Image (cartoon, rainbow, N blue to C red; front, side, top):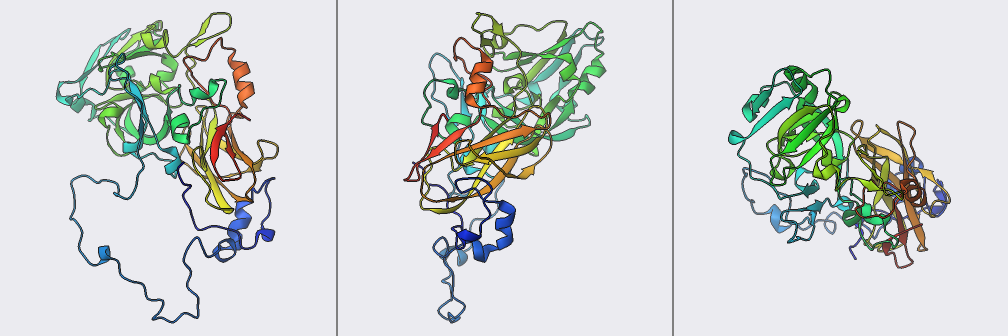
Length: 439
């Protein structure tokens, strides 16, 4: 098991803590008002006595402070002492280039995912596209078909927005009858959040002149799978963008360089990467990935299509599955919440499997349809616990329990798995080991 990252913590005056709910959850604002001295103890950090002489308190200068290091570089890299990496899926010889890489949610903080750790999902690998030879065509039910080079698009006025992106298959393993032994990364790591910069799709479509009979836009990628999805025209004219940059730099190849569609709040598969065609139509194109995939088979043998929005969801990322608490004492529970329906307005946390709930503090949220970081202190007494989080969005939608979600889906089977957003339960045993459970 991975070791839970230790921070300065541990209660000195536990009797002073104001409980926010049962089983050790604490009012965060009251805790902060106590100050560092009251809330921490020696042992998690080395503390020097005020009576220690200056000579004995002198710190030894480490080697890295005595010798100049390497000079500047043309592109930065993470520290060699960090180990945050994506978790790549196993290659399948019957599915060349297909698969996914999952973000290390349990090792991240804040709301923005670094570009190099943003999850990936491919259907035929990552094409090496030379932008000088790539074109975007807009045709179909338009008055004036258009063709753009990459350099043409760079001349257009751009906007920047922070949004999450989530694969609709994220967390899908939790539809199974048995709770998988997984981590926040392996179960939920197909979600990330970035600042996306590009051109409003409505500007390009209006320039082409949309026919009055147009109701859909079909987007096709330049990868070997010719990945295609259909998008209702109303959404295309609303908040969709042609993204050219991610977190301030040109899109990385695995994120669709030189250009991708970005559809805020909707399942990631609709945000077609390596975009090469936008065809305006009067009906969905029924691509392979909206018929044989990304549909839900119901018990009456019909299939539900075009369930685009990603529902309100949250998970505790630390502590989470396959971590271990090293000792009793004060910990900070932290996690992320998001919704395709707008902003996260509140996140509640439980340490007793949903019997009692406390309001977590939303630490950061950078706009609508973006990840929100939440935090709450928890004093673990060494006993068993079940940690849960429950989010509510600006539409008033509350994250459901697993039982409620499975019943509402009304599916005949759970393969493939799409749109799972139920409350996540992490069990903590008396040894401090954290595991995924159904509760």
